[in-house]
Amino acid sequence: MQKATAWLKKNLAYEFSNESLLRQALTHRSAAGDNNERLEFLGDSILQVTMSELVFHERPDASEGRLSRLRSSLVKDTTLSEIAAELGLGEHLILGSGEKKSGGHRRASILADALEAIFGAVYVDAGIDVAKALVLRAYDKRVKELPESGELRDPKSRLQELLQGRKLALPDYEMARVSGQAHKQTFEVNCLITELDLATTGNGTTRRDAEQEAAQSMLELIENGSD
Image 1: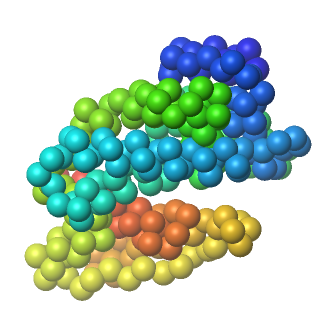
Image 2 (image 1 turned 180 degrees about the vertical axis):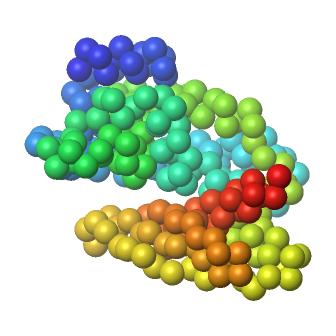
C-alpha cells in the first residue's frame, strides 16, 4: 500500500488515518478480501451532493432542468473513468487474476467505481467536509471548465438536431451486450447512421447512459470528419 498511499497524497493531497480503507477502496470484487462495492455506494452519494451544491452555486440563473443535466455530465461513469485514468488510479487497483489478464486496470467501469469508492472511504475516514473537498480536487479541471447553458443539451438531442439540420435520417441505437450481475449491469449500445456508414459504441450502467455515450462519440466523429 505504500505506493498507493504516496500516489493518493501526491495527486489528491490526502493520507488515510485508517489505511485499510484505501486498500478496500482499490479492491475490485474479482479479488480476495473486502471489495469496494459498499464504499462505492457511499461515494456515489457524496459525489451527487457535492456536484449538486457546485452547479447550484456556479450557475445561479440556471433552471432545475439545466442544473440536472450539468450535474449528470459531471457524475456519469464516463467522466469518472476519465478522471481516474488521468490520475493514474488504474496502476493501484487490486484485481483478481482474470481481470488482470483482461486489462481490468484500464476498464472504464472499474476505474469509475474505484474512484467513487475512494470518495466513500475518505468520508468514513475523515467526514463529509473532507470528502467533499477531495471530490472538488479530483474535479478541479472540470470545475474550471463547466459548460455554459447552451452546451447542456444531452448528446442524443444534439446529434438529432445535427442530423435533422443536414436532412439525414435519425440514428438507430442497438443493444450490443449486457454484462455483469443483475444489480450491477453494464450496457453496451451501438449508434448507427446508415446514410453516413458510421457506427460508434457506448457503455454505461444504464441503457440510457450507454446511448448517450455512443451519441457523444458519433457527434465527435461527424464533427472531426467535417473539419
